[in-house]
Every structure is written in C-alpha cells, then in structure tokens.
Image: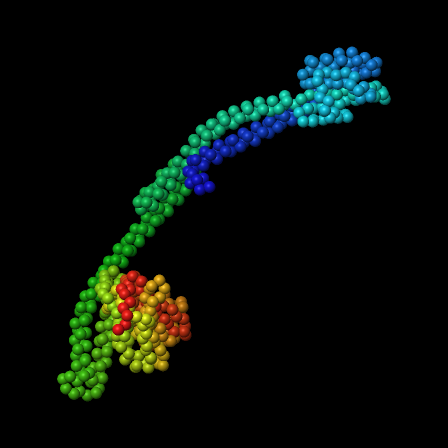
Length: 480
C-alpha cells in the first residue's frame, strides 16, 4: 500500500489504464466464450432434433414390419452426420432393435426430449403410428468439440489480451506523459521553492485545462507569500532598528538620569538624617520623601535597562557557585522590614542539605526579591508568605514563593508574565508598579535553562515556582 502511494502519477496512470484495458478484454472474452458455448450447444441440440425427426420417419416402417436390416441401414446413414456420435433404436418393449456407433450402456437416457449429462447430449424421440407406440429413437453426441472450440477461443483471446496490454501500455505512456508532465513540473517547482526559499520562482503553464488552472493558483499563492515575506522582512528590519534605537536611548538616558538621581539620593539622605546640623522635623520628612522617590526612579531605570538587555539578547549571566540557603536567608532579611511594616509573617525553609547551584548570583537574587516583594505587596495585613527550596521531579531544584493573598485569576496568569502587564484589580492600582518584575524574573530564569510557573486563582493565594534543571545543581553540600 505504501509503495502504491509513493508511485508517480505517470506510473499510476499507466497501471490504471492497463488494468482497465485488461479487465475489459477479459470480461469480453469470458462473455464471448460463454455465449459461443451456449450458442453452439443450442445449435447442436437443434441439429440433433432435426436429424431425429428425419430418422424417426425413416425407421417407422422397419419397426412396424420388424426389419432389423433396414433399420441398421437407415442408422448407418448417420456416418455422414458427424454431429451424431452414436444412435440406437428400441422396440416397443424397450429392447435394442438396431444401433449405430459405440453406445455407453451406463448413460441415463431421457424418456423424451434432450438431456445434457456431463460431456454427452442425449435425445430420445418416441415413434408412433396413429395411436400405436412402435419404439424409441435415441441419438447421442459428445460436447468435446464445443470445449475444444471454447479453448481455442480462450487461446485467441489470450493473444488478443497480450496485444491489448502492449497497446494499452503504449497509450498509457503517452497519456501519462501528457497529464503528468505539467504536474511533475509543478511538483519540482514546489520542491525548489520549499528547499531554496526562492519565492521568486514560478511554474510555467502549458495548457488551459484543470492543471493549468492549478499552476495559476500556485503561482498566485507564491506571489502572495513573496509579498508577505517582503512585508514581514521590512517590518522585522523596522522593529530591529527601533529596538536598537530604544536600547541606545535607554542606555543614554540611564547615564544622564543616574548622575542627577545619585546626587538627589545622596543629598536627600543628608537632609533626612540632619548630617550637617539639626533641621526641623518637616524638612527631614521632606528629605525622606525625596530620597524614597529618587530611589524608586533609580530602581525603575534599572528594571528598564534589564528588560531592554533581555529583549535584545544583550543580557549575559555570570555563572558562579551560589549557596541557595544563604541567598534565600539574605533575601528574606532584606524584605523583612517591608513585611513587618505590613504585618505579614515571612518564613524561609530549605529542605535537606545545603544546595549549591551554578547560577548568576545577582540574577537569582533579583528573581527571589521580585517574587517575595510582590507576595508581600499584595498580601493583606495578617497574611503569610513562605519561601521554600527543595528538589522536584527529575532532579530539578525548585524555589517556591507562596502567599495567601487575593490570588490571580486563571485567565491572567500568562498575561502578567509579559512586560508592563499587571493584574486588573484595585490592588494593582493601589500599589502601583511598572509590571516588569515578573517579566524580568522569567527571562532571567529562562536564561538559566529553567522556567517560572505561576499557580493561582481568584481568592486562593499565589504560588510562584522557579525550577532549575538538574545540571544546574553543582553538589548538595551537607549543612555545617
């Protein structure tokens, strides 16, 4: 079946034409042989009936007068009738009165009429004079001549079939070339376009039939693809130029903004701490507000630069051995004041031995801080945030940040991982943010060959899973 499916259209046309021709010749031959056999047998029976009628009239007198010699002479005239192989004449008592030829005594003769028994055709005819029954005339013949004629017909038909097969093959080859050549040309053009990505190539139309229409449709489709490719290439080039311009702009602006921001951060810290002399409480409060706002802008600039480098492929990880337990403890300590200010309990747990990962310490620390900071920010007062580390399936190492906050609707789980996207709720509007933290975290994890997965639903809290592949685990070092 697979070989038939892989055959070319030309081969299929050749074999199909030959098969149809041979089947047609075979059907006609068999029908002709059967019809000829039936016709000859019917003619033979009619001839037997005619001969029987003539003989019955001639043997009536010998039977009436008991003249066996005259009856035998009458039957001997059948020698000129090769259609009759054997004959016999029975008297009114059923005894053989006269015969001609060798009669098989085992034959089952009919009482009247014709019967075909095997290779024999047998005829019985009653001889009567008025109301008086004189005897029975029986004629027989073999059908071997008919079978020989049928065999001869079949031999001739076989020769005709062979000749028809040759003619059908030649015609099929010519027909196959006429039909398959444009299709093969179209297939070769399609392969060349697919292999070489040469969308400027076209198939040549050679006829006005359905194949020509198919070639026109193919050329039109390739033209459309070529036009779309040019448009996509132009759009890609424009996007790449815009991305490079954005990267250069962000790099330039970060340098231009960092210098005054660093000065603002430094001077606002001096004011808030009254380093140069005691200031009124209101001025110190202004200084703290200025310091906090400037620090927020500095963090925003850092996030934008990180996102830009990650998008453009310019972000590179500085791999080193990182002790997971120590890193998680340090991150927890850094966000502990934020948790205490919101009255959110924060717990850290690392299962089993101390684990060392081959990773970028700064990137991993940024991921954990982003996830834990988001968990604390969106968890209401009195809530709980937990940081855990342990091995998952296939030797992967998994860092989990779970909270019992309001959760994220399932339909938003993928969207919030995109840049500048946030959950559509009053909490997002209340707490603000740029929507870059999760996108940056996922990109950093993916740069390590891992993945960041969010599991949440409305009202059921949020669980963030950071999964690192097994080849990132350097060695589980027993805790001291």
